[in-house]
Image (cartoon, rainbow over all chains, first blue to last red):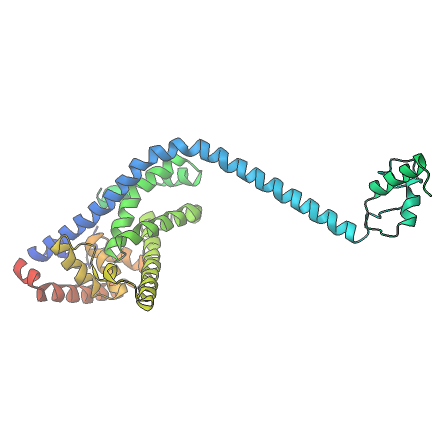
Length: 133
Length: 189
């Protein structure tokens, strides 16, 4: 481990310096191994907990993804309805309880286009059952 | 474990297994190199409580970048290079923490007390190493304590071998001067 142009190492030279260096090397090595041994002792316990931790992490990931998806869906829906993509009382609202087309009548009266089509449809049906005055 | 044993241990097959994601291989690599890394970090002047964090960061980097290691250089050289850069980072962090403690007026006992106060000789070596510049200390520790040849150190630090030998000589002079000026060092003679 020594090339020809390298000087002689201190550990192979003067005794006092060599012993100091050896003691220091041994001390640092022992310290490192002490800490390493602590890790080794900890390892079986960590391994034991690994499957439970993994499934818990997966469940949390799934829950997070679902929450994010629901949030995005809600956001997209509210954005689209505020831009008028879901007209409140378009003639022939799909969710109407009443016959198609009839539900629209109340929508025409109610100029608030933010209302949900289904509800307006319901009121259309109500008008049919109990004629609106 | 001696340096030769470590070098022999890090066979390319083990590294390939690590890259392939074999957990057992990772564990072996960690078991062999962790004590080496911690000891090296301590010798470079990283305090023991920071050495643990620094060591974790080193292995994180090994885990991330081992697939990029092409085997043109010795793995040990590559690994020690990571250790050196991590040691510099740890020292910077420690300096920042010390400055913060100084500014906030917190106690400074943790700064002044050396890690090896229990052993006077180790404390003496630590004191002598503290007189060296960062590069001198790296070269000195790599040559004297990690038993690396200067050619390998030159590759590691990115300097010509002649420069490394000169830095080593300066480091040795400073180191010996400090040792011989101390009462314990004179007694040892």
